[in-house]
Image (cartoon, rainbow, N blue to C red; front, top):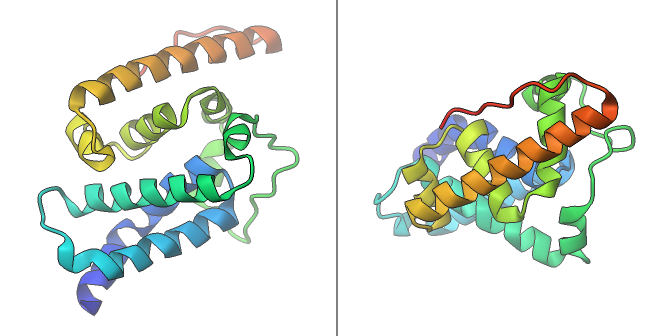
Length: 183
């Protein structure tokens, strides 16, 4: 089991961390939740039947861990709806992680801020589909949804993101560019 666990951790720990970071928007909490994911992996690996990929299975566990974390937090619904303020939130490390580098780019930061206007389900789909490049089928498996629900949720999330991004650009006096995301 040690070699299997080491291999899973080596291959996917960054993806799991990135997913959880985008969900909880707190580096320390995301690190703690990654540990919880791998604790659950250790406890349940013998029950993994291989009906989906290991990555899909890990994201399914990570999703459940994130939802459990939201439930434990006081006022989790309000927290999800709050806007993320980059000027006060401390996400620092001696060496910048890839998320920090990407967030420095204006477009990525704008998308990241606008994710707050999406529901938890919509955010899950956007993060899985576009940040982790899972297919619709893999996303459906990880979320235990139908492919149709993933497509519908994705469509609604993209519509919300596009609208809020255009509004934000208008308010900030930016040029409005067509926001395009390939399906």
